[in-house]
Image (cartoon, rainbow, N blue to C red; front, top):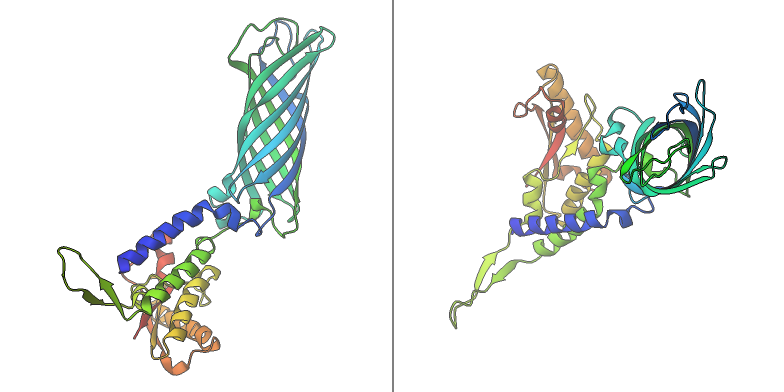
Amino acid sequence: MKKIVMTLAFALTVAYANAQTEKSSTAYNKWSVELGGGVNKPQRPMSSNYFTSTPSPWVGDLGVRYMFNNKFGLKADFGYNSFTGKNNSIDFDSKYYRADLQAVANLGRIMNFESWTKTFGLLGHAGFGLAQLENKDLHVKDRMGNFIAGVTGQVRLSDRFALTGDFTTILNASQDATFDGATTADSRGFTGILFNGTVGLQVYLGKNAKHADWTVISESQDLTELQNKLNELETLVANKPTEVIVEKIVAAVPVVAVPQKDVVKEMINDQYYSVYFDFNKSTPIENSTAAIDVVLTYLRKNPSASLDIIGHADQVGKAEYNNKLSNTRAKNVKTILEKAGIESSRLNTVAAGSDNSIDKDPAEARRLARRVTFNVR
């Protein structure tokens, strides 16, 4: 039966992952308006004796972005570039206009920037669009397609504004004229190359406090609704005294009754649900509240059950101090359950001290050691 429950849990996980965008749509803002300006460098094609400064003004960019979740989205943006001859170049004045649709990846969330900063972010973007190069003096009007890709650094100013710095590369396809407009490029592939560098401002729109760019969705938050569904399933299974299995090998084979196991109890005792702590802390981290809720629900539905609350610590520090810390962690979890209405007589705390079964060298392993586990009796 335990395998059946875990299989159903896996199926629910897949379903909820596919529906993540819909579930979290009200948790944060999704829309933003982005404005930037800066410098550019048309790399090629250029006619002989025509060139621009490195870099040269000007670039303007206006975009509207929509995030499906806190990691991926789409944006439509419109750009303007001005190319003029500088220094010893033959004089020219060309304009470049473009419109692009781009996919956006929040690299800051994907790479877990939140583990070291809440101020800096990073976006990646890439897509396709249409562009037009114009030189009115030379009567040039060249339409082309383009591929655009770049990275955008972010500095969070507030929940509504972020300062940006962007570097973008644009590849033009079917560019018939050089950027200066003086000669024919005679190329059909993605041979036109243009670099843009801008600074700008992102304005976040919506009624929620934060935008998707700065929203961290932990694993426990992602699976909270999944756990609720799983708990309902486990409760239904646990409340049945027996499960009937019928095998129709031949006619008149008798029905076999198999005693039903307490699935929720097994999962708690097998440490499917544990409460975790930060280094040298005795207060559970926010993401561990779901495990306490599972244990609390079980104790309420099974008033004859009692519980061992077992505190652990990592191997950093002296053994005496870690014993004391593990005991404090267990008592704090006991207090939470008592305040939720569970009688103290049903709760027993155990100080397990340093967990020597987990390697103390990797930081991630030490995080797993700093925990409280449960044993239902």
